[in-house]
Length: 497
Image (tube, rainbow, N blue to C red; front, side):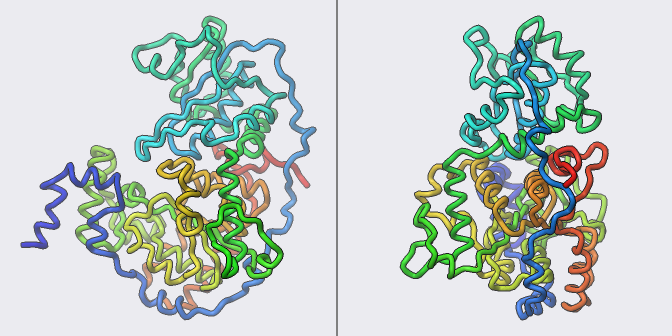
């Protein structure tokens, strides 16, 4: 009876579980902590020997492409601005980042003045951080001063042009019909007349409203310039990021506190660490777990919790998959669990002395889900373990700033790996490609069948993983039609060496 009552709880008290889904990892999954699903591989991995360690950490060789010289991106301001462009950006930090780059490009296409973009409050994370809370606005304006005019606020004549103004009624100067991946000509034909009539055009929604193909070369280069040069985080994020990177690279001496904010790195401290670390973006939150419809080993309680979450968040728009869990995994369509990403890293040659930084907001299942990964990599760190509560005070509860800190640390790591594709993965991978830095892309199509094979030995698993990731460690990939220049910066953002 007691067991049946537990299973019925989400249906008897739906409001309780709705609030819990936003406040913490699933309580149900913690009541039934998942056990390791690959015990044989895990046992061998815990006893593993390091292979090819020197090659593992070796930086990427030059691949024939480099960042373009400044002379290749020369630009001039128009004699007269055609009006003001406002954009309203939703999504998480990295989706907003891409929208900012596109907004600059649209302003250039229209010879308009860009108002610093408005970032909408994320409905999941409830973060109200503004552009100026996240990005160094003065740096942003200065880097682009020869390309477009940018203002922090509208002049008094346009005081009425606010988000609230556009939310209450249909407005003639609001552009609501911009198609996904609109062309430059579309903006000239549809938005330029609004600028001429009203002096201002507000585009909402705006995300993904500019095409990646058939764009003038100078517009493409400008988007790259925004993404890779103009957008830098505010000083306190960079300062805290530098402190975390220092602590990851250089083990502190016994007399030093690892959370002594911005303590200078001394020569003696440099000698104590190997100076190398990996950033793992563990994208395993409740949204992803529920949306995937995969089984993650938490039993019936977890399945019911995820089914309830799907209904609450997506109101039936995301249903249980028509495929079985085994079919989904064989197709490589299930997110890697912390246990599985740990086995992947171990098979690639990382050992229990590897310094690992965990970049994540919340992991579904909490510490119970992470424990297997931690057993493989006992030197695993995160924001809480590396920084004091005082240091984290300015970013506490602010998902965008937490993500910005992880992004910054990820850009300064020797190796970056993301457990599953997503906006953070795409943004960091593209940025690291631009700088020719090593980034491991998990081969999901390979790993799914490997994890389903319960008779596979550790040597067989390791051989398959190493072979299947030889060309997935930062090797350049030319952008294909319709692909993002922010994920694939070659050839639009780079020049032949």
